[in-house]
Image 1 (cartoon, rainbow, N blue to C red):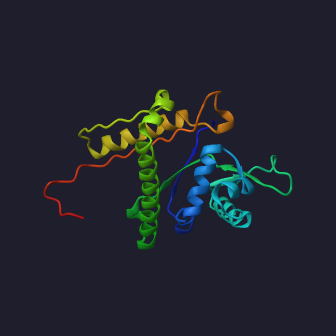
Image 2 (image 1 turned 135 degrees about the horizontal axis):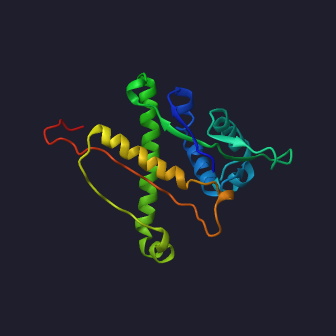
Image 3 (image 1 turned 135 degrees about the vertical axis):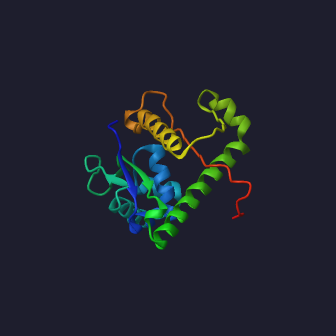
Length: 194
């Protein structure tokens, strides 16, 4: 897979496109399957194709997905993710409305992650028996300067991008894998709560 285009989202409209819960679900389905149509999404998500077509066009408008005309038949459009690595802009560079949108998107993503982890924990024995060769988790702590933290993050992202591949490029036996990384400084003991 070619090196992804890295893009920081600062435009409020582009950020807003990710705040809609159905669009987040659409992106998860595309991430899992590689390509989708509004019909396949309608069956999975319990929505009508007209609603899904609208949201697919909005995601395309803001550069999150792209149409695959070579797969379409005139009536049905196929969609996949663009080769873009999306990151939200530094909140310090945004106005108040932009910061609110970053917070909304972040809360939704973290809620999705918490749900995924809860499902994993609820089905841990079954999941572990079935997926042991491809399941791991780790916790660690260290002391880093801001410069070291940025270097660590850059190396982590390079590793993820090195192994990133679309479904149609994946080798036999490959499965969708969710990778999550959270890193933040410990709160100061004398810091004000909240």
